[in-house]
Image (cartoon, rainbow, N blue to C red):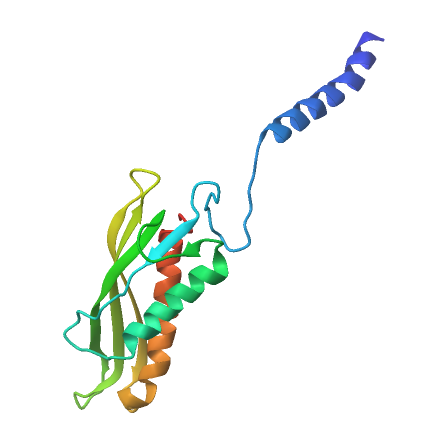
Amino acid sequence: MDSNKYSRTLPALVMLCVLVVAGACKIRFTPNGTSIDYNVYRTISVSEFPIRAALVYPPLQPMFENELQNYITRNTRLQTVDGLSDLRLEGEITGYNLTPQAVTEDGYGSMTRLTISVRVKYTDTKVDGKDFDQTFSAYRDFTSSEMLTDVQDGLCQEICKELVDLIFNSTLGDW
């Protein structure tokens, strides 16, 4: 009879332990992948990203800066400010390169790669040890039968979106 008593109370005891442990855990899910504590961080400043590359495509700077600003605005509750802020993003566009990728039998390139590199300096004024200075790169390939001037805007927009995603995940996404 005693073994029957234990067989009924043991599952109840195990369930009680699971509920206590689960209640003590705090899991936080955010829809956009950010890990920002809005009790600590309220503001961010995003400086200009001037082009310092050997090859210059003038529309690239405002295209990148707008994409970065808009992404932060859409995916966080941080207030964007000029000057002093809790978080700072600054940097420069350091690379805008075209390189042949595939060569045909007659020695001409059949594919060309457009690579854009951005150096980002991230500063967290609230928590030590989170600052970094890192370069991010992304690229797109296009056929050499296409003129760069015909595909340049579209390629740059795609690359800027990828770069912003990489930068966001490394900074505000805290991946």
